[in-house]
Length: 191
Image (cartoon, rainbow, N blue to C red; front, side):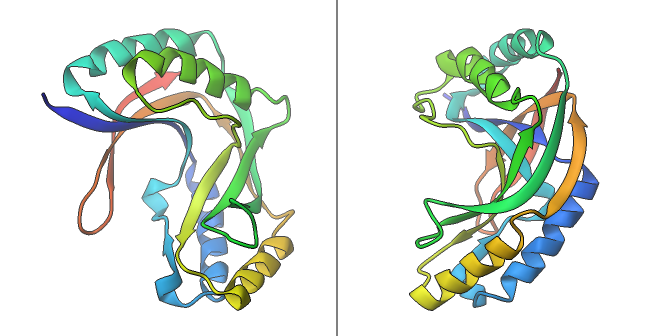
């Protein structure tokens, strides 16, 4: 059986990626290079559902279900603003930019995607969804580095990275390799 490692996401427009890239450069100055892996510009997105390994013969069926689910939803007016950290600022593992919408429809879209994709994944549903774009992943930060990073996040708490209309959801294949993962859009589905 051939499998594809898949996730479903909202793409980010170029101006938002550019603004996030500038924030990444500022954050790099707070950490030694070996302490963080920064998300490459072309890979910035908002994950709605990570599916993991999916039988490649089921991709067309998945695309059909997602097309049907997304077609009833409509475009979203989104903004990316401020930084956060998972699991928390004292022990940051993931640095992210919050992505939300004024009408709080992003969470509803995520639940629709989660439901439509349920038959194609063994990944558990998220207990709580936080719309975000991952800027980087931290490894083994000491207390001083974590404090410096948290201080920078506070400084960027209200920074606007951009507004945009999201009118498509993508089914993306992620191929892991020695230089990091490579993402390929298999389908773009209109909202």
